[in-house]
Image (tube, rainbow, N blue to C red; front, side, top):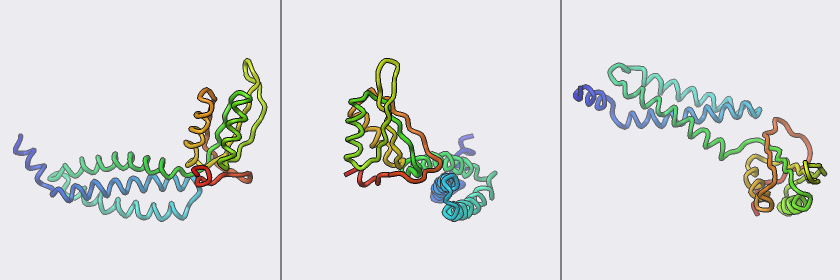
Length: 187
């Protein structure tokens, strides 16, 4: 039994397993980005990523399938590469943060004024509305921003009023209005 296991492990060179693993991570990460580009309407970029993705897949999959009964470790490494690629792809997507969000903040009137003033000082466009809560008057702030800025904006709101109700949603389309640039907000 142990001899058979050692034979399976030694059947494939380590560099080939590493190449399969890394290529699979790259391929699946590209697939994640391709889907994002399609959803955001970037067809040309999605086309290019799809071409590269499938080219990698053809070469790697054919390398794994040939002799799979003699070298089953290739299939395991191929599967681990897929799972790792999903994880890496989601991390890349989170860092790139394509798209726009609407952030709605519901807070007390005075806190609303402070939050709006602070965000505006950083170049963030804020629209405010008067609202009525269960027990008191409220200010409702609406901020349209890049997903990249979302975390910074929410952190700023929480620094001023940790009790504020904050809701953010991705936006499918947005036209007109004012969107701040990330660099302006970070300065």
